[in-house]
Length: 322
Image (cartoon, rainbow, N blue to C red):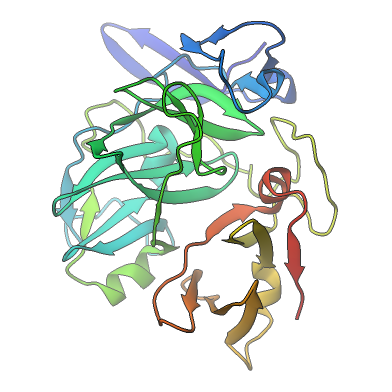
């Protein structure tokens, strides 16, 4: 079996990782209440669908003490690089995907608010969560486990497992506890710094030896193959087509970005889901999508995702068609 990332140690330093993904890398679990040291006894998801992604717990290390640069100092970024952008509590920050794909979780604070910035390169999903749960600020790590190809995080306070795409804890003391999404953007670095020239940028000084100029998932987004299989395979779109996934109560709906891109003469799309009126926009130059609640004018939570991942978690999802 090949693991997702091969760590090579020499002379007390990490020589950066080569990737050897294969569809056979998933290790299905049939009858083990523990995996990577996590107790799955009260798992709310099928244990047999929890797979090892290869690395052990914290083998993909979360960023716990993020350092930031000014936009002018972030010379390692290309204008076309994608970043997760956050503007909250008077703080503006960008988290480059070229860093996040090596770490998948960054624990940060914007003002007095604890946040978890998360990215799953296998599903193309960047989601920011409030890290305050039941009055306690949680610190998240990467479990090394996957559910339906998506990262399972864990909190270091209780060792509960959390599903990024289910938006909740799936095992441990917090099982069933939801996570609140914080509005964020995924767009080009050029687009973000034009909007927020005074933005701070996550530094490559993460405390870990990684070659952030190298993408270990190179070609994955363009290849329609899925490294870790999913139980549902709807064929409405290609596996790696990007969609905007929206949840209103129990109803899910997906908006294909390739369809939104074609609306050059009408850059806004108005739609309604279960009585909630929403407005969608997409900028093909900056690759930024926005979703607004038309009643309040406030950003409405959504998840930018590969189609195969969204439909696996929300198999009854409705589809928007122009």
